[in-house]
Length: 282
Figure 1 (spheres, one colour):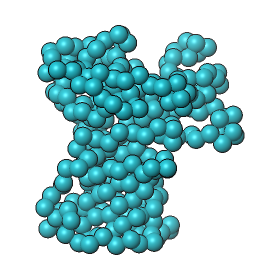
Figure 2 (cartoon, helix red, strand yellow):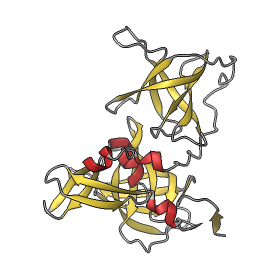
Figure 3 (tube, helix red, strand yellow):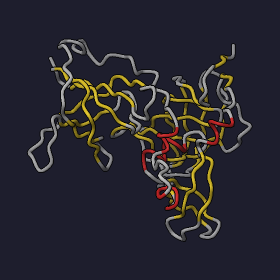
């Protein structure tokens, strides 16, 4: 029976087993069995063990229904070494690969996903309606791979200068609440709630192994087994993070390998609360 998802977003958090077929850059064909993290009417966010590039074409097969569809990689959203989370979009927008009834976005929601983007090569500008997982890819990379008519090839696009000067958010996630992973409430281990949480007044530095960059965040609660921090960035449940708390600039900070175990939306703000558990606790 087809499910009806009553939500404002056009995406839903469901783990569907899929097979992904494609070709490596070496020309060797591959097949990988995995599962989705999020679904949308026209694509999905899914985990793969290999590195792929934007606009690379693949075939996704729903192992439950045995239906399949041609798709392309929109870009990298997040993940960890050997577990990369990609946003993918179907090449045929009429394809119905998922057994889900998606409610259409309202005009107000759709308008909130429009940005003026600028080609990094020729500086051409276009007003773009970010679809499906383009918002997540844009959040993760601060740019997006799109076809440029002037350059005649795919190029990287960033938010246009007037968008920044007008005070509009560079982060597309400031306009959209990302649904949490279907595994957001799964505990990492038996020690998840051993110590009582304490609300500190400290900052932390968060890094994601295998990916460039780091983020300084506000720590909301801390315990012997982990901590909670607030961030407007998109992290996925189950991701491996390196966290230093407390964190001070130009100090010998100690980073602890951790796992993201829970994600919570915070009404009235673009930030989310992320709970991480330290790995190796006994």
